[in-house]
Length: 196
Image (cartoon, rainbow, N blue to C red):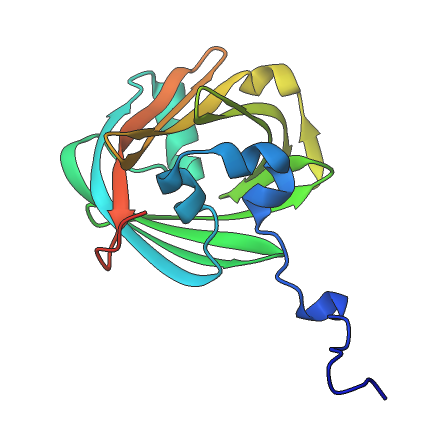
């Protein structure tokens, strides 16, 4: 029995486990700007709101791929809400682009960020530079099982940054033959009005 002045050591299960982005980025995570750290430190449920601009590819093959992935239609200055449900095992992002919903599930696997979006599971290598997070697709699987050639997804990427104290994002996806699928960018703030 410990003496009254001694406390028992914390068990591993009682310690706060790192979030998915903390697991993937490791030490560089803690040097990111406040708005990025706040968003990617969420545990449990959180909600963000902002605005978004969306451009969609016009090639018929790009339209088909976008439909299969459940991508939102083109929009100008549209409202965006994102509900996050996060724990150490993974995160679910429920996006609402002006009434069009898109859901994905993210987790860390072997140092990569794995995102399941529709029937495709993407693998992203993340790195930080100049206070921003860059996502670059390094692989994909259909239905989480069938490997797809990584070179097909070389132009699927994302950048997250802080601009004037606010979280901003830009996502771009293009495929060989199909060309640009989607490009969307905008900003988000905590829906409850708290600031970083």
